[in-house]
Length: 255
Image 1 (cartoon, one colour):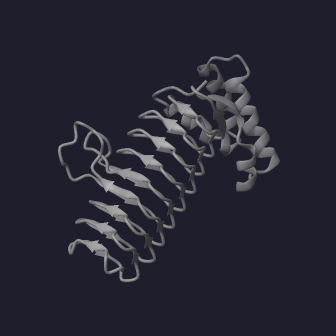
Image 2 (cartoon, rainbow, N blue to C red):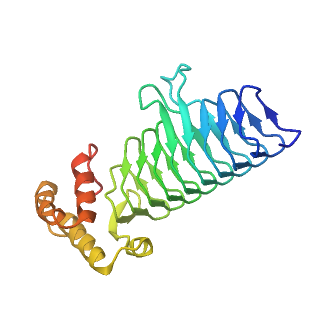
Image 3 (tube, helix red, strand yellow):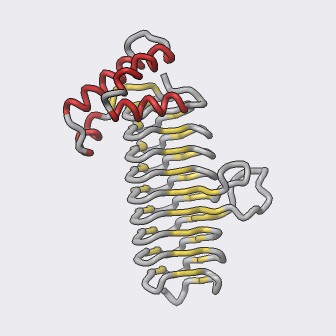
């Protein structure tokens, strides 16, 4: 640890954690082994940070949520393992009106100036490009890619392997596998390249494309499309995931 760092004596920090100069670690912060923290970072708690994360300079993590209803309740921020968090990111803790926590999973690549508001839930293996901004209570599933300056309205969900273009403004749920962009964002197809990189076969991709066309190209109402997808989902797990997402949507999907 750099001698210029300021560490609260109650913080729990593994012996091999690297902390740069002028970084401030507050009370009720836990940092697990192998994590490296750059200079001029502020981490307040309750916050738990897992193993082998790389947190670059000038981040603010675990501070109070930007919510007028918040009056100091002991909510938390939880960050998993092997995440890369680049410069000038802000991750707020949760609220009691939400889940009580903001959480980030494992193996995420989070670029500069990303904001995660209170009660956001981030999965694993995501990529957030510079300036992506999430309002409160947003849920991001695994392997999502958010283009630079993507903006997501509170309570929205973004499904598995979705991909947003630069400057997308998202006001409703984004189904799994969907590519979209624009303000307001509109669907443009499926994330074929992302699925290939994950190991989806061409047959699986064809099934996903068929499901996408039922939702967006067939002229069916969403309820009718869901009925059609139900039969396909019996034989194809990737469509089952999509179907479950559609049935759980509370805000409605981008369409």
